[in-house]
Amino acid sequence: VLFITGAGISVASGVRPFRGNSGVWTTTIWTNATRDAFRKDPLKWYNEFWLPNLSLPKNAKPNAAHLALDEILKRYPSNLTMISQNVDGLHPPSKRLIEAHGRLGLYKCIPDEDSDTDSDSDDDDDRPVHRGIARRG
Image 1 (cartoon, one colour):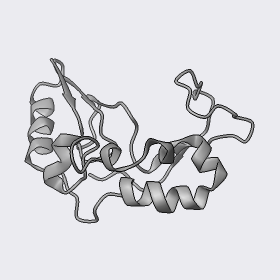
Image 2 (image 1 turned 90 degrees about the horizontal axis):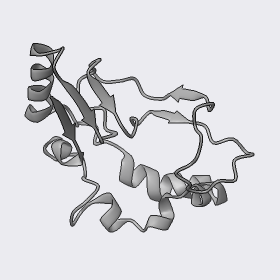
Image 3 (image 1 turned 135 degrees about the vertical axis):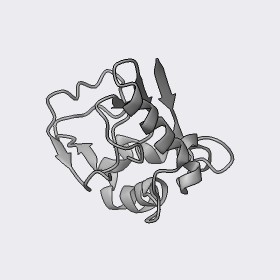
Image 4 (image 1 turned 90 degrees about the vertical axis):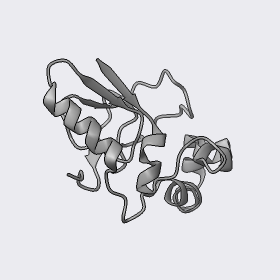
């Protein structure tokens, strides 16, 4: 059995969704989230795009849905996997959890020689991974 979760599961924890009337992509112009915008002015990118849109509320904690799914994964470890599209890190850590888009606080460096601005064909495998904030839980 496979569970797939998205941003909606964390709304009850105070995390802003990505879609919908107040969603990040609904209220933020797509051009602000590009590598090109980052390279032109990293400080502006962080202050005007990243921090206002992708910072977790300080009081964000796993809600009943996160905890219920975690309990199901613990009870049936050999039959279940969960893929989360979230980057908020609110799903409790599990070997059965795949964080499809990564997690806030875990990022890859963009080398100076990388001229690609937004290609899906970008080969990230050889880029160093750096840990930011510690994983909750």
